[in-house]
Length: 310
Image 1 (cartoon, one colour):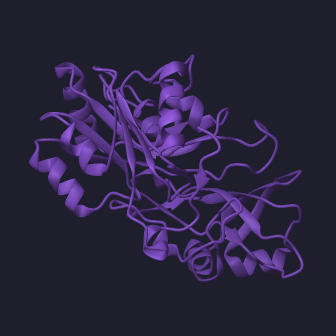
Image 2 (cartoon, one colour):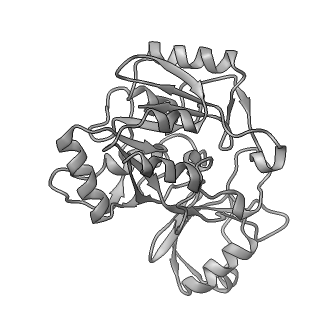
């Protein structure tokens, strides 16, 4: 999607109603404009909706007022990677609980010397990664299942969901399940020059429910591109690779094999998120959705309106 108004602030700070939703039915070809309740009403008993439970960490860390922040690219159990146009001196890194393992151009690979110290410093002094927006307080970057720390960039598709909507889905007989995929930060260097592997984990219960849904030919709807990438990255029928790293990128020539639908925002043409939506529907459908979104004055951005394919 393109040329939509970009929503920089959450509804709690603007007073607007949240959010408007366009729902495209793959079975009927209809597009309905409404709210998240519209989406819930289109769900059937036995459908499965998958949320990402990764919690976003403030991955931009200012260390020197005269230099750009260190931007952490991903977080692992034993260390992390970062992008910066300068390398902090050893004593500064030691005070952060980090040890530099390797350095290639602007890409740095760290090992934790004191992970607890590092996380405390990050939570105290770090800022959320944004792309032009003013960073807000950390509590503004949470969905209803954001429990597992590890994302460098906010997986925002679940932001507008709340406990009431989730309860209504469950009351309709819909299985609401979680996976974990820790998102890396994007837009850091030239396309393709930074490793894109991201860590994911599929709980065995979620894997069993997905496998059963595949056998029943029920719908499996991923909330967010991160959820879609996770459930497309393991062997859903044999239930292997439940915890791994993935570089899977869904696009027009790599269609989803597990997910039948997706909840996402509105994205610029040519972006990886836009191409991911094209893996679910063809370009003509996307043009129809884009036209309705434009005529309805819908918004893009992490706090913007939602595009849903079911």
